[in-house]
Image 1 (cartoon, rainbow, N blue to C red):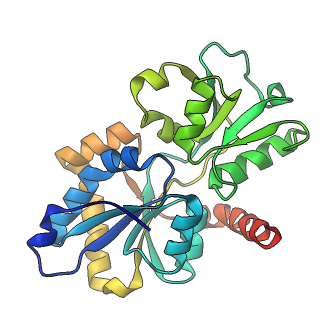
Image 2 (cartoon, one colour; image 1 turned 180 degrees about the vertical axis):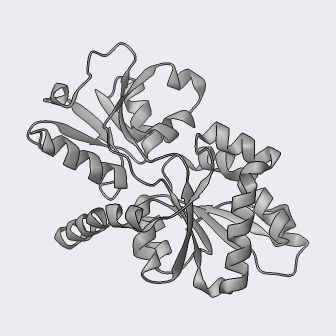
Length: 268
């Protein structure tokens, strides 16, 4: 478990800090910078210190999440569903849909699934939701990993984009929102190819030990956040737009990928 930063309120309040954790889809520094407004807002509104956590790897995040180590977690949907089967209550997801994209250099002629035959695609951990989705998407178009294209392992989605931008891979797998959160100069070096796959975005979940009253306060605070000055800036800069309720249909759409992840873990 990696503590990225903590609220200045920690020394002022008597309550133990809330552990707010974000899945390590980008570098620790990038996540700290992106989520600082939300961390500070929650600390102020809840009147309680809030510490920001991430993890050095996808596996580390999931292990801590499923062990109940975080109070509030912002997680890919399949891990959030698994966590909700144990200790957590699903609250909301971001309004923007989760859309896997294959990022290529701006001048690349790659454009459709068949174009990736024989190519090298940078991807983050095999447990990543967008990797599960995209590997299946490529398979549906007749391309199998290791036979028709090659996976270049990278630590996170930001690193996958950088690999494509620097020409270390033919493409990098990421999401539209992860791309938007990178420096403008990096964004200008690349082009995104949509996969047409869309799902509910990162879920925000809360541990049941917080109790119904505090969980309700956290959800209410989150819903109010996009209407604040810092919330509007956060949602625009991150491309998350706002929050939405998690629907039964969205949970149903994620379930096959939960099952796929579990099969992969058994065979690992």
